[in-house]
Length: 178
Image (cartoon, rainbow, N blue to C red; front, side, top):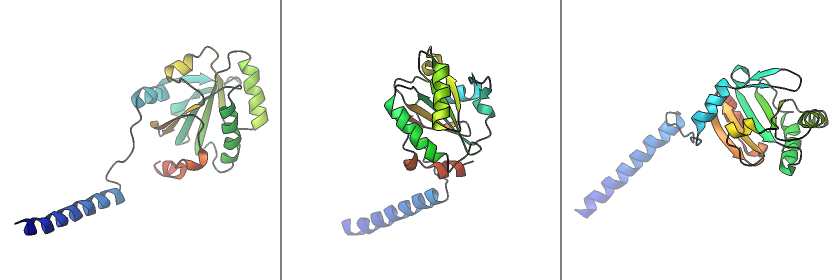
């Protein structure tokens, strides 16, 4: 009896593995990891409006780029500055029509001057917003900086607590989802 069941079990496992592999190959199996609290952040994506120091209004839901990154930073944050240096190189590959960055500054004093200084120093193609009272950071439940939220077509794909490792993220894959 045992000798007859073992080959059937092997055949069943192989068939199951083949079906699973085909589902993954044809994209029928959704392997996207759900980010905790995604609905809250996606609601902010749809409803919030931000004003840059230049007076421009930024509504994330109106941004044409399919990938939007909201990043929280401050001038005194060493990892934030390292992230900006990497972002300079990264933006040579992708433009604002592909990946849009919104940098939310957490400096409590002279935030406007700091934003202007960093915008000029790093020559980054991104919108900056000041948040000296921490109202935006509270809405996003950010506890440390840098923290970034990566959205694809308004859906939160990833939250990064700490600096983004640009070369290790699947940017091309996210752009193809659009």
